[in-house]
Amino acid sequence: MGRVEGKVALVTGAASGIGRACAEQLAAEGAAVILTDLQDEMGRAAAEAVTAAGGKAEYLHHDVTSEEEWVEIVGEIGRRHGRLDVLVNNAGIGVGGSILEFSLADFRRQTAVNLDGVFLGMKHSIPLMRKGGGGSIVNMSSVAGLKGSANLAAYCATKGGVRLMTKAVAMECANAKDGVRVNSVHPGIIETPIWDTIVGTGEPGTNALPRTATLDQMSSMAVPLGVKGMPQDIANGVIWLASDESRYVTGAELVIDGGLTVR
Image 1 (cartoon, rainbow, N blue to C red):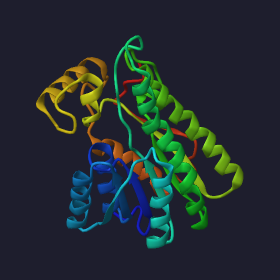
Image 2 (image 1 turned 45 degrees about the horizontal axis):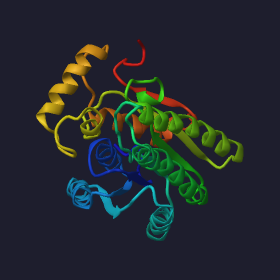
Image 3 (image 1 turned 120 degrees about the vertical axis):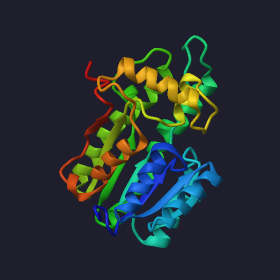
Image 4 (image 1 turned 60 degrees about the vertical axis):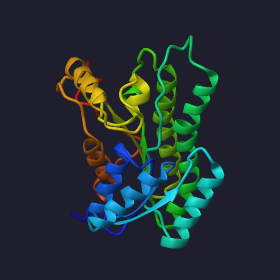
C-alpha cells in the first residue's frame, strides 16, 4: 500500500472499465484521484465508491475532445491541489467495420477521442506537472496499436498513433529534463464495454452475458493464456508506471495481453 501516496492523479474515461479500475487502484495506493468522463451518473457513482472505500476521489464532467475543457480541468486541478503527478489518458472508443463501409464521420469521431484527446491531455498537463517537479503520463493504447486487425483500420490507426506520439513526447520531456515520464499501455482482450461497439455484443455500457461469452470464446482461441483479462490486470500495470518504482522507464510499451501479440 502507499505506492503513490501523496500524488494527485487524473484519470479520463473513469466511469467504467479500465479507467474506473485505474482510479480505484490509484486511490487505494494513496493518490488523490480526479475521475473524468462524459457519463456523469456512472462517473459520480465511481468516485463515490472510491470515497466509500476510504480513498480520495472527485468527479468532473469532461469531453476529452474539447481543448477548452482540458484547460478548465487542468486549471481546476491546479487550483484545488496545486499539482498534478499522474495523468492516465484512458478515454477511448472503439468502432469496428470494413474500411469500404466505414464513414468518414466515424473515423473522425474515433480519432478525436482516441488521438486528439491524448494529445490535448499531454499538452495541457505537462506544464502543471513541470511546476511540481515532474510526473508520469500513462497513455492507453492497445494491442491494436502494435499489429493490424481486420475491420479495425480506424481503431488501429488511432492506437498506433498513441504509441508513437507517446515515444515522441517522452523524448521531448527527457530532453527538457523536466522529470516527466511518458509511457503507453497496450491491453489485449479485456472485459470492458468497448467490445460492445467493436464486435456488437450486448448493450453499450453493460456487462451483458453475450459479450462475456463472446470474449471468452475469442480468448480461448486467440490468447496463449486462454482467458480474457480484467480491468484490474491493466490497472496493476498502470500503478507501476505511475509510481516511483518505474522512475527509469520512459517511452516504453507495457503490453498486457496474455501473450496475444507474441504469436
